Structures are given as structure tokens and as C-alpha cells.
Amino acid sequence: MKIEKDCVVELDYKLMDLEEQTWESSDEGGPWVYLHGHGELMPALEKVLIGKGIGQKLKLELQPEEAYGQYEDDLCTQVPREAFAEVKNLTEGMRLAAEGQDGVHAVTVKSITDESVTIDANHPLAGQAVKVEVKVLSVREASEEEISHGHVHQHGSCSHNH
Image (cartoon, rainbow, N blue to C red):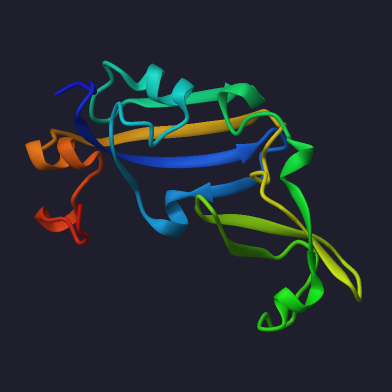
């Protein structure tokens, strides 16, 4: 079976910066399993995977607009230091989950003063070209339920309410 919209795809993957530093890989967290055509991958990667089959490998270099977008200065925010009273050993470079009006987002601590903490909601690779290596491990048709929910159901069922 070849990859097309509404297929469940399992990939071995490695995401690197242009200096070949690995940022994410399936070696750490296991293969990436996703529903093709539903926006779960970088669009440029999803596009080149169409028509590929089990065992096929791809190596891509993606420009910022094809990967994590351009760096946006307005995604940096100063927050009162006391908002981080519960965070132990707060340090620059630390990644945290921050709750906003539109859900939970990963942020990076950019700087810390006695009065405030500057957090950055840009992806750490925003504004940078990246390298991606993938190998297709499996491809199957998605169930009607997976398609209607817009995501893969591990172990045959969905663990949340829709």
C-alpha cells in the first residue's frame, strides 16, 4: 500500500539542524504514527511522502517556511517572576508547558530577572532550515472513526471524548 490521504503511517525519523545536531528522533521516543493528510506533519514532508511505500527512505532539507516558520518576535513575552514560584530550578533554556487562551503550548525560558521571566513560544527551530530523514515502516487504511476524529487510535480505540 502506498501513502495517500487518510492512511495511517508509521515512520522512523530524525529531525536535525543544518549542523547535523539531532533535535528529535524515533531512537528516543519510538516511531512516529500519524494520519496522513490531516496536518500532523510539516506540509512539505507530508507532500513528498505521498505515493511512498514501506521501506522507502527520504532525506530532505526544509527551509524555515516549510518547517517551523519564521521566528516571530511577538511570541516572546515577559511574565512576572512570581508566576513561576512553583517551578523548581528555573533556568534559561528550560522548556515548559504554558497554558494560554488557545490551549497549552511549549515555551522556552529566554531570560530571568528578579522581577520577570521572558518566555518564547516560538519552536526552538523557528527561523532555521532543518534536515529530516524518514523511513516508512508501515502504511494501512485508517478506520472511519480515525478519519472522523482526525487522528490515529492506538490499540483500536480513542481514549478521549469527542
